[in-house]
Length: 89
Image 1: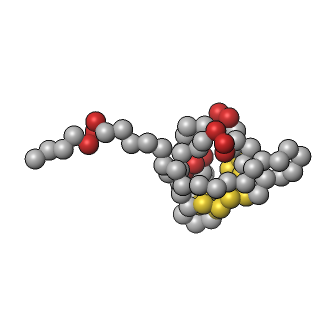
Image 2 (image 1 turned 120 degrees about the horizontal axis):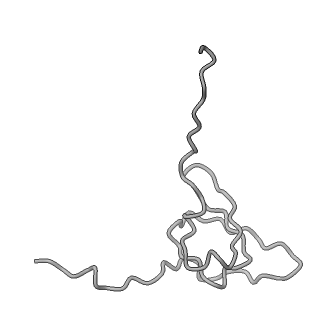
């Protein structure tokens, strides 16, 4: 029997029930998280998150353009490949 799971709306992944308020003039505290699938909400704007990439935590400062996207989109999990030329040519 097939189920119609594709028709069910899945809401945003909300992980942070309590967040510190942004005080103008002060730097916001960094919030450490491993929840890369958490949706960025409008009340996250101005906060700084330390998102885990599998090895270390990388800082992400939230702006208005990021609202609606996921935290993991802004922290790459793999290193960039750079082609190194050989010296013996």
